[in-house]
Image (cartoon, rainbow, N blue to C red; front, side, top):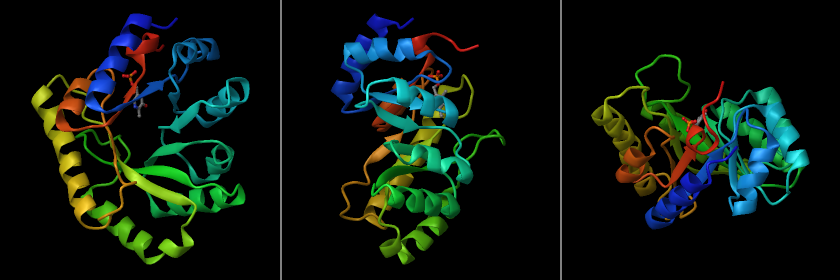
Length: 224
Ligand SMILES: *Cc1c(COP(=O)(O)O)cnc(C)c1O
């Protein structure tokens, strides 16, 4: 079951903020996705490779799929035929693999670099230094990486009720994003995405300058 009034309200908020709503449909049935699709939603996000592949096969082909979970290199090949954006790139090896697999389909796949924001040790991602070092490799080998396009940063804030802390973590990502637009990605308008904010903290993300939010439970109800 989809919460239609919430979707309508969110869609208005995103339009006002110039942000993209990615509806996170992991663990939810395809019928829920179809319901939102029929209302006009096109961007959907999933976390599990097999689940995404199965849903892609049965749902309308103009859905814009985002893979937002942690991705293992050996699974990239299942996504490259159709995925639009991969949010959580956290190593140069993964970037190379996406490029290699995308080339087989003559596609260019948009990716985001996952920046580590939270204090919890369990979350994946890279800190500023690691991102800069990945970008050094990227810049040096760019001519061989034509099938992948780095479009911005993705991050997850700490799982806390402390709004100041969450806001500070988003701020850190947005500051670093600005630094990259002034340096590595100077004059490269495709580097434009700040994917931050989920059901619990998307308002803080928009206030900090996020322009892509990934929202699941608010739209589809809580997951088991
Ligand atoms: C599940 C998930 C979301 C959505 O979380 P909700 O709290 O249900 O909105 C967003 N981003 C990532 C990376 C996720 O895994």
